[in-house]
Image (cartoon, rainbow, N blue to C red):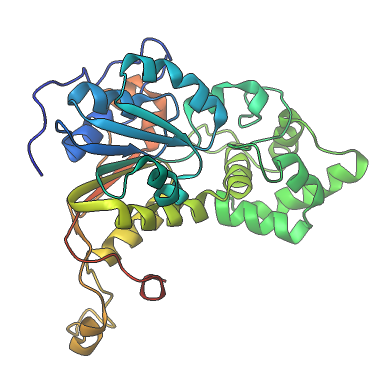
Length: 337
């Protein structure tokens, strides 16, 4: 890839209009190295921090995707600020190819992901993402599908325990599920404050001061929005959309996301598992695998600098993994699975 433009935004600055501080913006821009005339995808528009950073760094074009209609509506101000250079697209990033095709885009030079719930969604009490506010239990990033309220009041105790454990990594998942089922027999659980109270009755506050409801709320949000399934689709779409030399930067906020990104990139980079650390890789197995479609830019995930973690609480759990697309074809689905 060609070098980045010398024009750079102040990486630590908060967006003055949205009040939003993009997480690991400096690292994302360093990775994507935006250049004039190139095309980039901001897969998670949110408050527009990555899009704004890319557009300020070079005379490039950005296509920003978000499933949340509220994010698309708020992004109109950015479109006006960068006329002809920013395209907003409502939809799921797992459908990136289909969403970009009507705009004549088949190939891009860089893709950024900022996973999970956005700050503006968390701060909007009416959306029901946070236990900090008393609100209706919704948690949907888009407008379709069942809400968290519907899941909480209809799922079996076993299903609730499984999803809270699998998506929230909550060790007390079975106790939480029992408490939820017991409470809903008395009255439907419709408010965030109700659910938080129920969880706190059976889960103690952690040593780090984390609210006992945190993991259960995370689990419900991930389940309601199929975040991990969507991530798998988004990574596969990125492999197909990136041009040779194009770069991918993925910022995640918990281990479930990071493990999936790590596994995908290690696999596509040809880091094949070995049956034993004492044995060489099987030559016959290697010949059956496709050529690496990515080169890792670093073996380990990058973490935010101490200064950013001190300024922006959301950055404390962030991790970024990055890779560069090779000229090899995208892996077929049957091999990738």
